[in-house]
Length: 87
Image (cartoon, rainbow, N blue to C red; front, side):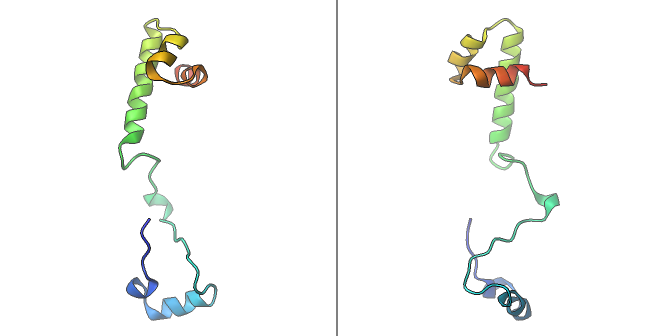
């Protein structure tokens, strides 16, 4: 996360108003709710994990065991169970 000086982007009146509540501190201003994205959406990681999980579910339906999938995907047996038994 990059830091930006408030004086570079905010009007003086707004800075004065904010200074009534906090001075010399770093504050985080979140994005509005509608612009939030799920974890991994920007990097593509979410899609990779979803594709991997779909492959695991399909392999399980085709007869591979939990232990085989655990070894193949380098995940714990419990993680494989969560994936294959999830809706």
